[in-house]
Length: 513
Image (cartoon, rainbow, N blue to C red; front, top):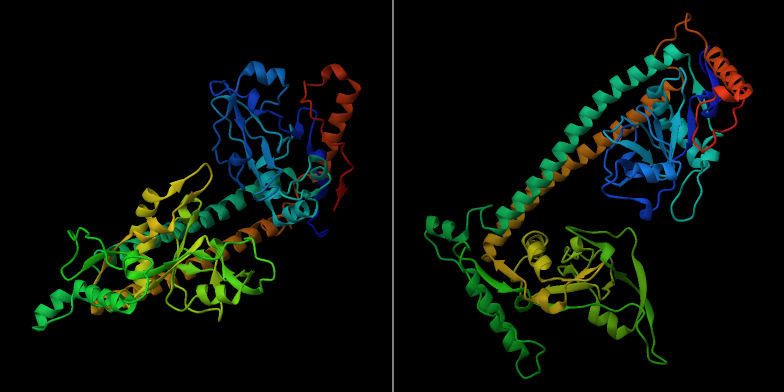
């Protein structure tokens, strides 16, 4: 934190700002057994503490009797709440008050200065990049980071005069309000883009995105190969290729309802139009002497909805025969077996990004027969209309959802005529590429907004956001009054207000700047 501040400012800890009437301590250790859904006291949680704003999300309660028994600290309107756990660590907001008396959990620090310190100024000071960086330097914990109240109490704030605190808070709120309004508009456009993408894919899968081949053929006075003829030709070719050797599955498609399809389209199953295969099981037992070699493989995390994530590609030990059997080729359509429910059937098209790559058993591969359907069109369908099928047919356990190869193979797939497929894919790619460009522009604007927000706070707590008034009482005089109030209270125990069982940090001498 810079030592160059305007005249009249001082460096002090939060504890230095707490008068005898104030509180600087953790919330309360309220366990599940202490809670009561019908209780008259609300339990404020980490989820309620936003980065600058109160989020009002929690719905947990306890009784007044239990709160008194636990010696809880009851919150007051305008208390500063500081989250001692992510995300982000050290975020702060003002408690606005509640219809019910309220307490908070132990991982939320309560700051009530009980003095002339402006709490609106304080939450912005705690959320500033300078203070947030200081918090990060003192965080601890291996799995989930946190900062102790003891460490929080050692961190210094640049404290301006009381009147300047008010001016700083007002100017931050004015600028941040305008910025937040712009961010809200950008996020609204993001949501509209998501709906636009979905509408494009829906229209494509329903035959409404481009003129159908049947319509064009009639208008041009020509014939065309409809999808059913294409399907029969490809399946007949597959049957001929399989003749004379044992087949693993019947290549023919079961009768499917063709109602609702555009003219010239047909419907089949994924199993009938592709070669489906599961991947290699990780950690499987191996025979003694089996020769293995490392090979890149795709996991569920790599196969996203509409794209392949290759930021981290791991390797697995496999035999040469397994590599030959499972090696992906461009055009293979990948489907996730599951995991979380939203991952069911999620996937995209492999485009040969890695020369030799296989897939694990939780990722299925569909290799389309005879160019029956464009791989991208199949994957777009699976990621949209197919989702409902996967959810309805998937198996749900306590924590995981999954779909097996048999259910995946039974996925009904609409097939347009080949020429129409080409036009559909070209139109989708054109429209989605425009949406991608707009999305990239929005992402860049949101990133700039985040940087601007940090810049506003940084300037504010360097004393550069609002002008100073030489007539303001220096902050050192304010802190000196608070110190004397504490000394007087310490010498007269009868005058001390009832305090939380959480002791305030020992005050340190403020340093004038």
